[in-house]
Length: 303
Image 1 (spheres, rainbow, N blue to C red):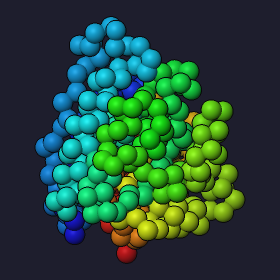
Image 2 (image 1 turned 180 degrees about the vertical axis):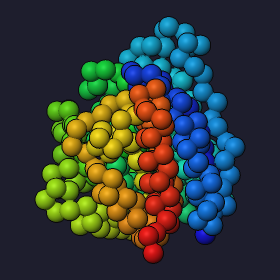
Image 3 (image 1 turned 90 degrees about the vertical axis):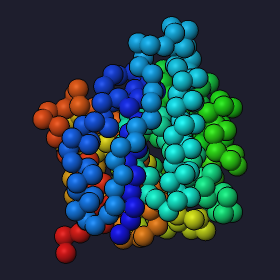
């Protein structure tokens, strides 16, 4: 059994739509800690990263990219915590919050592994590739940029949180289930050599075959795998409480199969659970679903 640390990251500064800053509370209310303890894990659940509210920030921070200085500072703080957890043999599970947090959570894991001369593999479960840079993003929302910064592109401050830089190599990054990718992001994926399995790949090959390949790539010659899971990876029929829903996503069973395979590979170092928006949800159902998926990724089995 593992020692798990839940790290709340209640931030919506990287997104245009409000509400994901309440995601960590929704996930905790849905019983995340108790579900994981029931599997035999030791769970620390009291940590939250302190993040200013949007209303507290100066108007001049709402430029392009929006709230860059505050997001960078918050991600740097988060990176220190995920690095500390990995050094201590603890699995950090970061509860978002918008997906810009991955610029910090993954950077921290990469820093801790770099101290052992190891790399981190990254599996990105998301409807979107989030691989814009500030110069290609039309919106300026940083939750559409974390992968580019983890690869060392974009803003120098946000892309330099990890030591060494970049936090991840393109050959160690696998995106699964994409179905909404902008043209500049397509160019970045092709130019930088990131492996992508779209929803069409899942439709044609099945989730098990795709995840088998994804896990093999992300764990090949790395010290372990960081899984960054956006709730909008799921089909909106399953998860309505997300800020950027896209039709045609992973089903309930596909999602659980993917998470069960992550647990089976025994290479999971860290997990992000992001973009749960209780403002858009009904009776906290999306958070409840996400907690079940967390449990599957961390060892829940049918038999």
